[in-house]
Amino acid sequence: MLTISMPHQPTAPAPAGDLKNLEGLRRVVEDQIGPRAKGTIYQNIDGAFEVLAVIRDPQQARELLKRRCAQWAVIVRDVLRADGEPFPVGSVWTDSDHLVLREAGADGGAK
Image (cartoon, rainbow, N blue to C red; front, side, top):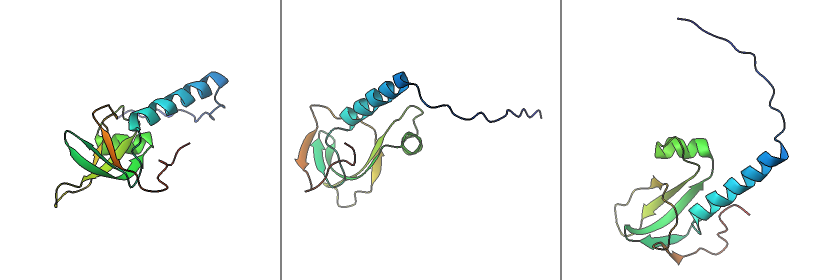
């Protein structure tokens, strides 16, 4: 077995263009998550869901959703099922999703 070792290079500060791209990605992620924040309940054709957590860490989201490109995930529980177990979703907020209840003070943790 051949092992190649590469010296660790310190990370340089991000150029201004990269910061602009990161801000653009953050906005896209927030638009995709929509108004879902911890404590909110939303409904769509699949059911009614209580948001238990919003995961904005891409690595954790990728592990939860088992998708290499995931940037975020939402942990939900179907409130219409008595035996509803929490599960992660990565579906984008659309016009077919409807906010049913937004808990007082729920701000989504960003902004």
